[in-house]
Image (cartoon, rainbow over all chains, first blue to last red; front, side, top):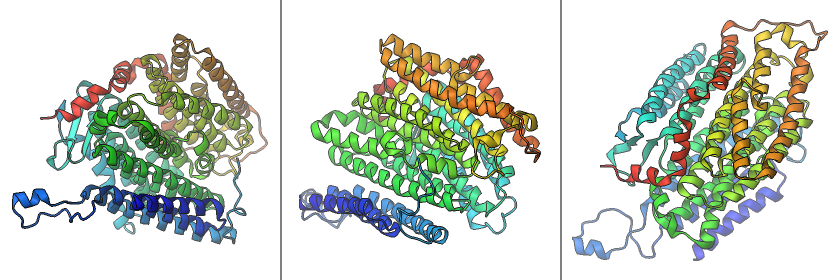
Length: 116
Length: 487
């Protein structure tokens, strides 16, 4: 339960940073923190207290039945998701470099050429 | 029900060529776009055969020979068979257009990002696994962010950054929903989730579907989540605006359809109808105020998406058929409007509607493209839009929901005003003497799209058997049993 609260808290911290900060770099950091929260949440789903890594050990079948294994699927999902997160972060940083080049500022409230 | 690996090439081919071009991009500087065009031609042939095969029997692709629900499977039924064909045709046209339209920048990067975009599109439509869906969704989004900022101008970078932040936040919600679903039913296969969704009740169900609609709504441009759309669609190169407006938002809509019809068994449809109505009214009334041609079309896309959403999720077979027609009509007409208008305005600063003055006399075919596209979105007889809009109105009339009919007509009024403003501008004389010639093949693209709209408007049956597609979407037990009972 503590892990669920922790991961949800991390997600909320990230969201809060994205909503309150004006620096474009901090907004991207907030996105990254929120993403970490989601990853932790996915890990928690597959976690079993005292469980072993889901690898076939040198055990006989009855011992296998009595051993607890953690769920490997969420871990596989997170590996994929981390890679996607890195791609988004890298692309976002590239955008920021170009934003600062064009606008000479990092303040999102001053980057306002486009309006509804 | 056939098991074959054939549809897999729709994903492998563009993905392979994208990275092939990217790896040897210094060799392919000159011919990268042509190579992309050839790839799209082959892709089109494959998509045509997949479409033909899927109309008689659904196709299942089991990857690594795992039987569903284990492993990842692709599943082609009648509806997504049609979508894959439409995407492939648009791919051919847009890559041919890019050959003439894209003049600056590193063309090999552009070509490989364009191919990655279509990899994502095909993957989204074909996959039968919800996490796989997420991955293709991200491939689509990441290539779309980069393509929006491709011209590296002040405003296109700003639009790309806004799009990146909002869409990434949306996909986080989608990931949370996948996690919650997995924790409840212990599977990621769409058919398997659908067969076990009854076990999820109460607040958890609300949480899952809330996160899903938040995640998918950003890409589908549903109302409170669509602030990025007018910026991104108006600041991208015109060829990219066309595929963002015509295809990318439909990828989001397809996700919503799968989630709410096949997985969700018709839960929370009323919420979607109301969101659709609000999106339609706000989109059309905002488009009415614009002076920038591409920005107006972007808001009009929001409005059209609202219309399609409300028709799709009203849930009667008649309305789902009408919504599928309107979906195809919106793709064809919006691609035509962006490509033709974008070419006429390619040298103008800011794409102002007033810059279209006199275009009919200088570039008759491109101007005809704008006129036919606008009329089709408005729903004037002899175009596909007439058929679909009448069907939507009749569908709501048969449900006795006359409020919706009034609202659709109000939205159509706004649509009429701003499209007639554009058409009137085309016929005005201007003192601007500058003129360039439009290449033959670009005119051919416009002619092809114009003829498609008119022919489909006269013989809508050419699109295939839409009513069985609608029946298939509404009858989820068929989907579930076809995927899970494979031997």
